[in-house]
Image (cartoon, rainbow, N blue to C red):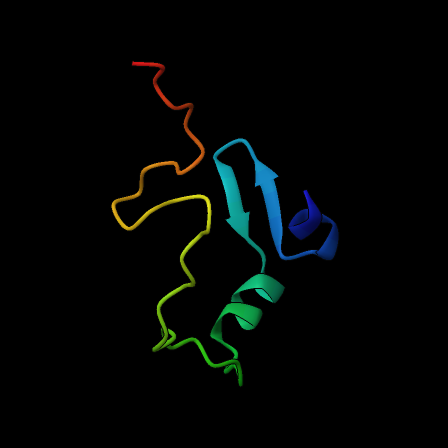
Length: 61
């Protein structure tokens, strides 16, 4: 919906299509760094190394 308000797309009987402004914006160069980060995401303290939840109830047996 926001892209439609910005004039980048239009919805018609054949579905959603880019407008001329949308095509120009899609072809523009960007200065954002889109490369993948080299660092692994930090491990969650709620999950162990195998991905299991740490806060389980202990068995009474």
